[in-house]
Length: 118
Length: 118
Image (cartoon, rainbow over all chains, first blue to last red; front, side, top):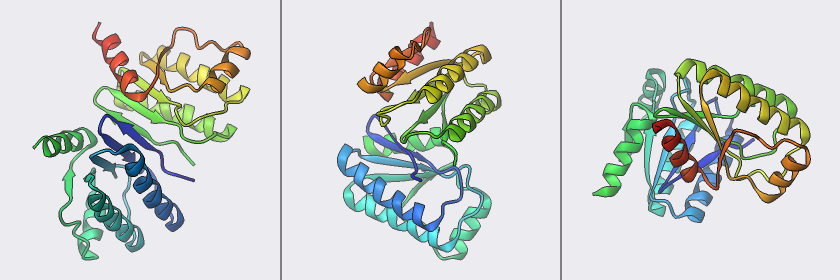
């Protein structure tokens, strides 16, 4: 099973709507980087609104995919982080440094466009 | 497994990126109608860019979900229909009447906004 990645103008949109198992998370990492390469987008929005739990492995994959996307030249915005997910991330010491966040998908896209417009 | 449905402004976005089995298609139908009800959106874009084959059951579910969404008051745009899919739909006699189509997701969203703006 793969997570669909949508291309919209100069961004990729991903909505993660269920708990990921380890295999799916790694597949997602590979697919996203491949898609950034293919489409030459300048930004990625990853929406976690529907995720109310995150384990340490998934948190690490998420942190990695953000760093990797940045390396490839695409800015990442994470949207809709729920309280429990924020607590887990901070307790695990994964502060998602240097990553833009926003409360929902719309605000995330706006933030990304501002950032890219600068 | 469920197909993620993204809400963006007054639309829902769905990208179907793999062949659906019958169970997933029915689950998608239920999820989409439920989400239209919850979010009160006025439009839906269903992107089929990555689908290169469609069977008669899935084609029927797709036709049904369009009619049902229209009944609920949401306009549907189908984007990225590939040649083989277009051939199958017409040969099956499913012309997707009264449905808007567009060549890709961006053009689909524009078409929907025009239609909703009228």
